[in-house]
Image 1: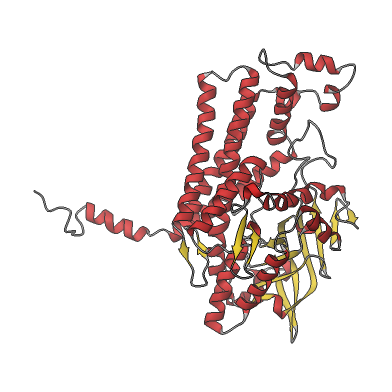
Image 2: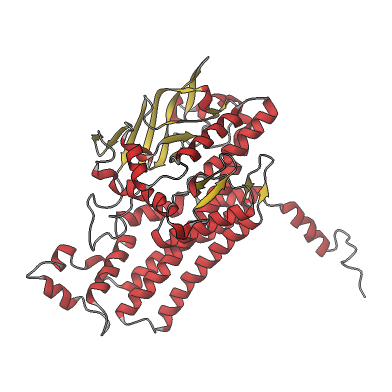
Length: 486
C-alpha cells in the first residue's frame, strides 16, 4: 500500500508517543489533544487529496523505486515536468486552501548531496537515504524537516558559540551509531509527523565538523522533546469566526535533542563540512520555488476575497477598487510566472534529480513575499474598518440581539447579510488575528528572509559576463558585431 487514507494516517500516529509540551501542558495523546486538532486536519487533507480521483496525476506519481503509485509528498522530481507538477500542485492547493505542506524539498537536497559525498569519499550515505525514501513511499509516511538551529550569536560559527549546543551536533560516535545534542527551531507539525529529518542550516568550516550532520529518526525517539507553540486558531471548530484558523493550523516546535542515539543506517552526513555549501544551495533552490509559488497562490486567493467583499459592500465598480484588485492579480501572476520559469529552466543532477533555476526561484519569492503583505492591507482597506470592530459570532446568533446585528450588518441591496458577515470574518482571520501574524511572519522569513534572496541571486548570477558586455558596448573591448560602422 503506497497511499494512505486520512483514517490510516490518524491511526498510524495514534501509536506514536512523542514527548510534547504545549502551553506548559504535557500532551499524553496527540490524536485527542485539542491543541493538535487543526494540525492533524491539515496533514490529513493531503491524504484526502491524494485519494481523490480528480487529482490523479497532480498529487500522485509513479515511483520507479517501488514500482507503485505514490503521493506527491514522497516523490523525487527527476525533470522539469516533475517540477512543473509541483508548481501546479502548490499553486492549486495553496490558492484554494492556503497550504500544500510541500515537505519534500529538503529531501531533494539530501538526495543529491549524499550522492556527491559517496562519489567523493566512498561512504554509503546515498543508499541509506534511498532506503529511507523507499520506506516513506511504501508506507506513505509524513516527516518534518529540521533545518534551522537556534544559532545563538549570529557573528560566531557553531564551534565558537559559548554554548556548543546552539547548533545540533555529534557528541559521540559509536560502532552502531552516533549520539547528538542540540536543537532545531521552526519545525512545523513535528508532534504529528512520523519522522524527523535533520540537516545543516548553514555553510560550515573545518572547525565545525561535529555540526555537519544529517539524519532521520522517529519523532518519538527517546531524548527528543518538542516544546510546541499552539496553532494560531481556536481550539474548537467555529461556524462563522476563524473560518481558516479553526480548520487548519500550524504548530511550531523548538525540537530539543538530549543525548539522542541515531543508528548509522539513519545517518546521511557526519563530519563532511565541505559539502554543507552544496546542500544549502540545493535546498535553497527548492524551498524558494515552493515558497514563491505558495505566496503567489495566496496573493491570488486575496484577489478573489477582495473582489467578493467589494461586491457585498457595493463598491465593485469603483475604478480605484478594480485597480487594486488588478494589482493583486498581476503580482500573483508575476510570482507564478517566475515559478514556472524556474521549473522549466531546471538542471538535472548526476544523481537523477532535477533542481529549479536558483536565480529565478529567488527572484520570484523576493518580489512576491513583500507584496503579499501589502495586499493583506489593501484587502482590509477595501473591506473596511468593520473587519476589526464587528460584533462576534455569539452576538450574531443571539436570539435577542442577533436581529439587531443582522439589521446593521447589511451591505449592498440584494446581497445576503450572512454571506457578507462570513466574508468579513474570513478577512478578519487573514488580516486581524493571530493567524495574520503567522502569515506575515511566514511570508517574510519562511524559506529564508528577503536578504537571503538577494545573497543567493548575487552569488549565483554571472555578473562578470554582464561587465564584459558593458565593455563591448562602450568599445573598450572589441566584438565582431559591434562598433564596425556602416
